[in-house]
Image (cartoon, rainbow, N blue to C red):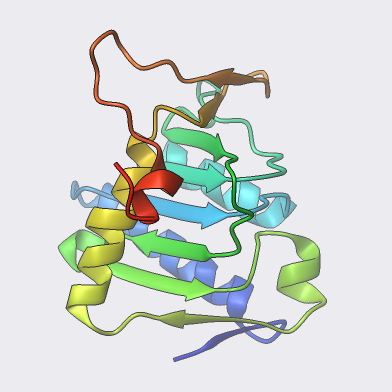
Amino acid sequence: KLLVAPVNLRQRLEVLIRREMGHAAAGRKAHLIFKVNSVVDPEVIALLYQASQAGVRTDLLVRGMCCLRPGVKGIGENINVTSIVGRYLEHSRVFYFLNGGQDEIYLGSADLMERNLYHRVEVVFPLERLEHVRYLRDQVLETYLRDNVRARIMQPDGKYKRLKPAAGAELVDVQERLMGGK
């Protein structure tokens, strides 16, 4: 059940991403949400571009370095990259796969970097309890995607634009919410 770098982690992530591409090709909804600190591995980036071109909606929550360019016409139109930097240095890595409605989430320590995928021992494991998957999907990841206080959205040119909430919109600060605040 464990995905372990450098043994099988990158290869298994590829299988899971390609499975989403298969769902998109079959006309089903396909969605990836990855919460990591860095996306710099060229092979993973190329695969995420392929997934975008296949119609897989991809939301990347990348706190730090991201070498992928979202929204580039014909390449990454289905990819969004959001960076949220707040009070706390977060270490969680979350890999979500819609999987044709049979949601899967993997948690672990690996970033999408060559050093994490090929040169270090890193472990990613699947969540097995449906209530845990639903909680992370509905309460945690969705709150990250709705953040409109600290979120910065990467533009196709690689620059970030601070998200500004619409007038009168509910303010969503993911770190505040996850700490039990408003």
